[in-house]
Image (cartoon, rainbow, N blue to C red; front, side, top):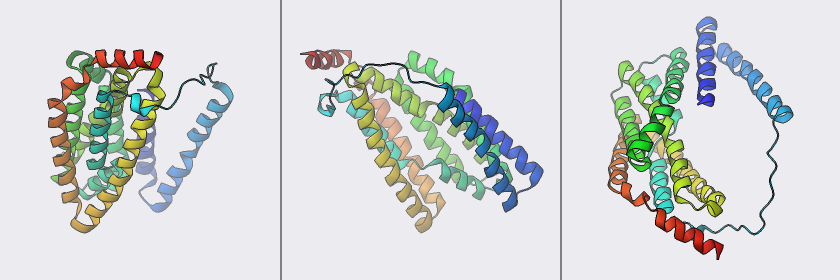
Length: 261
């Protein structure tokens, strides 16, 4: 939540600077140069004032992906497929500029996006505890599908709403996945689980960027966002259908018992 609050301040500052300086190339260069200042300050704080908590290495622990439970791999499959069909936020910004949102207003739209991440972070957590994490993740998928659908309308009003919905999506996508990993992976295999998860999602995201660029250049932005909206909606429905597959504390206990033997 705090990192999103910082992103709100940063993007709002960029908008105010561009509003004051104008939207020339020199103005953008100035904004990028000034952004180096908080980055350097953050690096100094991290190096000088932050220290790792003491820990004892556990040489007996091994990388054992085969020992991870089925529900974990079901999450990896869903998240990887979603990352494959969902375009990167840079495509969202490009599409917004096509929808008559002027270049100088893009940082303000990005401010709205980050503000929604901060606003919805706690409500999403509460809703996940009440409805179930997998159920809420399916709603998050649907929110992305709605974002892509709104951007297909090519109107400024729809684009502004899309940035708000996109912020709601971003507020839950990664946090809910991490929570499900924590629930499904045995304690002894948490590092293995995160390694497998981010490797799979990372490759899917890389491929998604290539697919997105190809679809945009070959067929136009409309078909890229139509592909993303359709794919996200189908995955939302499929995840909601399989939501009960993540309720399996018994399997986790069995895996943990096997690892201790």
